[in-house]
Length: 220
Length: 102
Image (cartoon, rainbow over all chains, first blue to last red; front, side, top):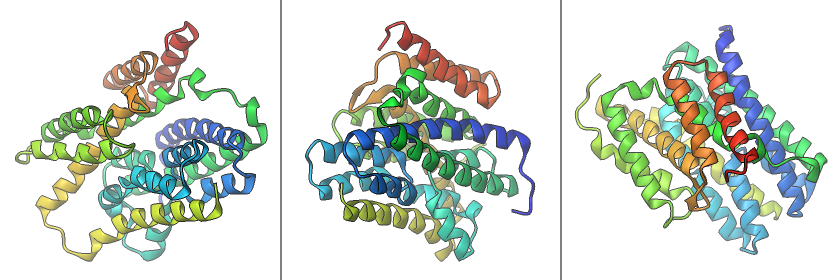
């Protein structure tokens, strides 16, 4: 991290981090309402750091499922991180300290953000900037949510649930300038949407990889 | 919720992330595979966007969210700065919900 951080990258990352903080607060509040002990909620955000799976596991256990089933559902939802790791490993680097730390801050948003910055030094700086910012905002948000409890308003009222797909899509646009990526993306979206009513959370996104059959030959 | 559940979820999630990062350097990856890894990440992100924009708990998410995402997508396509894309998407959805659109 000898490189200075690009001003625009910092601003854009902060926009996403703010949204992540708001969702973190709603996670803290929801976990408190579901009766999850405070240390467990905070440990979950610190150690798991994968929002979707944290919400899912709390909801599944609150609904009466066994912890084993809940953890299995959460891990299925997070399985996409493995192929994401393959895709950003060049950016994270091949030194073990970087890998060990970089693995923990690998989330959808840090992957999408750094890929939108190519594969060079700017992408590397963006990955660590996002990883650090998102981790801090998610955890501070969680603590705020736990403390504020039911005083935390529903993030849906602010449209935060639209901010994430819109932000990810904006980050994907450079990649989608390639015709083969557009074909794959179209196939992937179609498969995932068709599968969603029938499969448990996480699986539709993974079988979106079937869109790769439309990759065809390389073209730029 | 138990400590063992939290620790199992944390360990499993971390391991999947680390395996992805570490695996790539274990073997020399041919260029063809390299391209599929890259396209695969795009496929997963597009699938995430599509399902997050349109669905909730296995069903349709309602009109407010996809409308907000569509406004954000249009803004991004017109090269509006990223921060505004995010704000426009959230603002549209929030406004529609305030008007009673689910």
